[in-house]
Each structure stands twice: as structure tokens, then as C-alpha cells.
Length: 73
Image (cartoon, rainbow, N blue to C red; front, side):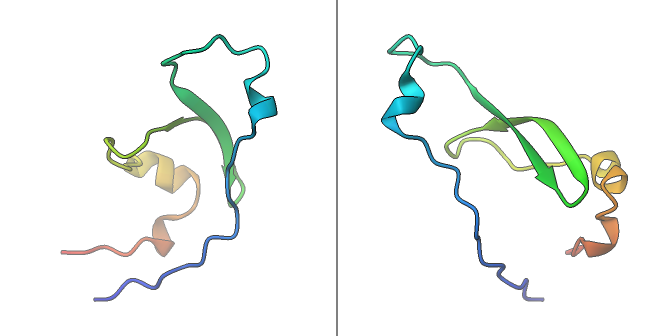
């Protein structure tokens, strides 16, 4: 079963001016707020690759996205 690739249109980026007021060096986690469909996810932890991208089924159901999930066996 092939999963269709969806083109990314939004990029989250940072500029040097975003460092104003930040104590450097730092090792704080980056936590952002995003909107997916009609649901606002208030605490999204951003990791550079060592974490698994997992949403609990209850979150997917609350967002109304369960019918859009491809279930692989």
C-alpha cells in the first residue's frame, strides 16, 4: 500500500532577531502551538529527530481525523 506524499507548504523558521532576550547558550526545549484542521494543539514539542511522532488515538478522534488515517497491517 503506498501512502500519497503531500507537499509541505508551511515552513517554521527562525531568524537572528528571534534570539533577542534569550540567554545563550541554552538547551531549552522548543514548544509551539499549531492548528490542524479545526483543532488547536497547544503544546507541540519540537525535536531534531530522536523522538517518535505519535498521537494518541483519543487525540486523533477528538480532531475528527480518524477516517483519514491509513491503517497499515
